[in-house]
Image 1 (cartoon, protein in one colour):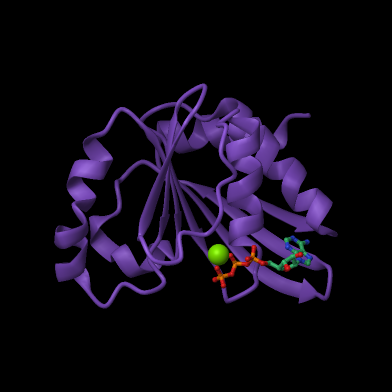
Image 2 (cartoon, protein in one colour):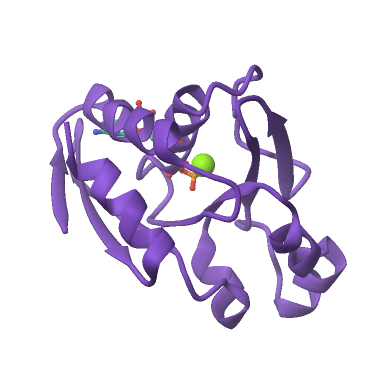
Length: 151
Ligand SMILES: Nc1ncnc2c1ncn2[C@@H]1O[C@H](COP(=O)(O)OP(=O)(O)OP(=O)(O)O)[C@@H](O)[C@H]1O
Ligand SMILES: [Mg+2]
């Protein structure tokens, strides 16, 4: 499904809906260039999930964990050098946590990504607008996709 997010506020509204619906075991894979709006979306997902701390971009750590209504893991794989580092990061262990996961630069994890996901590809469409392409790859992804598209 394609959405045109005409302002940061529109991106935030999408994140709030996703955050309200997200459950432990869910995985949202975010892709898109620098400044595409991945972190803006993650912050709104965290807000919608009612996790107390703001989900800032994890600059040094590859993963930040936030506890609120649920446990939310925020990964940013921008600095990931290769699959070997995913092991060092304990990626499989993270996926086994009773937590929901939102992952920036998810394409860097390649085949290590869980099978059932909601993929969101963000693309610049103007100074204040972004295109979002949402794709569910399983039942969990489908449920999130529905939540994102109902008002
Ligand atoms: N429609 C929009 N949705 C989201 N962000 C927007 C939009 N329009 C403009 N912006 C701006 O684009 C920037 C997006 O920054 P953000 O940190 O979310 O990008 P990112 O994809 O996480 O980049 P990085 O890969 O560097 O982490 C923000 O400054 C935000 O205000
Ligand atoms: Mg970011």
